[in-house]
Length: 530
Image 1 (spheres, rainbow, N blue to C red):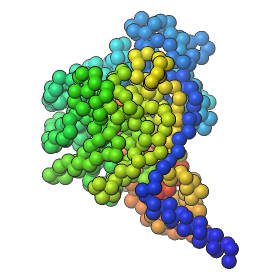
Image 2 (tube, rainbow, N blue to C red; image 1 turned 90 degrees about the vertical axis):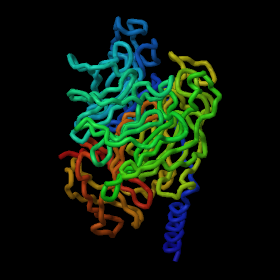
Image 3 (cartoon, rainbow, N blue to C red; image 1 turned 30 degrees about the vertical axis):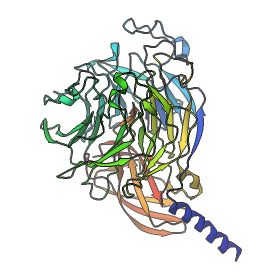
Image 4 (tube, rainbow, N blue to C red; image 1 turned 60 degrees about the horizontal axis):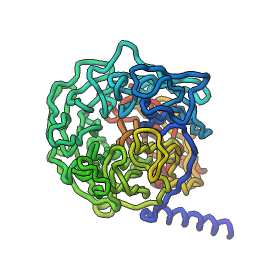
């Protein structure tokens, strides 16, 4: 009887852990004591490496370029020659970093992965304001590096802009300082429609930089800045709809909270946008570092014929919070501050506790406060979902250059937050020989080994967004249509249908998670193509 009783108790503990959705915690670990740079931008590649970038015009970083390399850019504002790196590549298998050579200034630039897995990086400051840069990732141990496109430049100065991949695999670049127009890569004529709320028209501190841009499953763009948003048809270059204003003041840089689109599922006809937090209007204008941040969240069904903002309240007020889509479809709101605004030295009272947002819960019961970190992540920090289900946190520099004064010195440590589902690692499903490529609208099968056969089975694909300034550009989670073909002997065979088109999931590389009873597998990288 001992074995059956033990098995029953084990299953009971697992069941209680699944049911107890409000008993969340999570754990923290510093994985790199000194990355050499304070990450302002970050993106995870299909080789399980992470590209981290800082600006170049601040003088030496804390990591040297290899083999005597140096930058000697007379157009850069930083001291030259510069023998230090301002970009590094983190190997997640070894938790080691390798310096990379970035040529022009990437301060407050934007990025997105192309369908072939190459990271496109655009704009920045000074000598980098109209540049395109590329990073084609490689196997760990290889020597891939940054390269700049020659004779192909942005038409306009792009500083604090947002990139979004489109259904055909091209990139649209929206907004930025002086940027009420649009641009594309590969280049084509940009939009000529007027976007007054992207052109510093509305209030005298802007609050419209790094606009929130989401590709809806019908192929149009949801574009939000300050407190205004529109539905934009980029093919016809027309604004199809103006949404109601979001109450509670500005939500974008320099008063930014964060935003994400909820997981696409079912028939993929519904898209819901969530925007949470931000600074009070005059906190930035008056350098008021102690003015409390906002705790309100707006949620709108952007595909509804008569959309409206449903308001909710976070348990912790937050400016500069990152919203990270978890493999389950829940959202982690992490990092940032509880007072002040974005900018150098303009925020105080770090928000050390992450908050879990469960979108399928009833209004008023969607938020759960999680275990805190001890490391403040304020201005110029990043947050990225990793293939193993952890969240990577890097950066934080509240100063113009690298400065070690308290209370918020330049932060070179990289840490990982493990959501509570990783406490149940012994129940994690494992995919056997996953496909490397799937085609739009086609069926494929997965063989999965599982310690316990659960009833709730999902296969979810997550993009690898470009994280910067409290917004993950291109972030997307799509729940595939699935059915369990067979089960037994701790194995499942799952039938899956790939997304129908690039409007639901643009072409490119995705992390594919099998999620059983809320416990995700380690992701397999899969390329989605037509």
